[in-house]
Image (cartoon, rainbow, N blue to C red; front, side, top):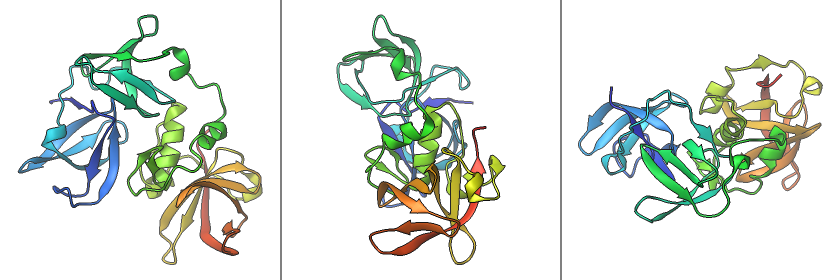
Length: 254
C-alpha cells in the first residue's frame, strides 16, 4: 500500500473531483493518507487520523517515507519553518511532525528535514493548559465550512482540533462525534470540555460545541465565540433568540 503525507500547510479535501466541489475538510501538515480511487487528475483518499474520505488534486500528491503508524508529535501553536529548499512554511496548530530535534531546531516529515525559524522546544508538543484554555485560543476564528485551522474553521473542525492538540482523536463530523464518549443526561451534570450537540427540526445533529463553564458554550458559529446556553439550547444575546436546539451531551475526557 502506497503511503502519502501532507507536506503543505494543508490540502483541501473536496466532495468531488473538481476545484468547484465543496471543501469537506482539510488534511493538515504531517497527516497521512492512502489512495482509494482516482478520476482524471484527481484522487480519492482516506486520511489515517480520522478515516475521512474526499478528493484531492494530484498536484498535492506527496509520497511518504515514514511508516503509516510511525509516532508523530502534534504541535499546539503556529510553527514557522523552512523547507530544505529554503522556502518558508507557517505550520498550523494540529499539524504533525516527526523526530523533533529541539536542540538543532529541526524535525522531519515525509523523509524531509525542516528547520524551525525561531524558538523550537517541547512547549510546541506538550500541553499543560486545560482543554477549555486551548479552545479559548481560537476565539474569533472565522467560520469556514470544512476548515480545521485558526484562520477558518467549522464547528466540528474546531472541537476535533482542540481535542487533537490534547492527544485525543475524535471523528471529523458532528454526527460522528455524537456517537463517541459517555452520554451525560442532564446539563447541570456536565463539566468544562464536554461536547454538546444540537439538532435541526428533523432531529439530525447539525452542530457541536464545547462546555466552557457553567451556562456557557464555546463553539464555531459565524466565528468561534462564547454564548450562554441552558437545557433548551444556545441563546444569542444579539438576537434575543435560541439559535441551536440542545440534543445531546457527551463526555470524552473523564
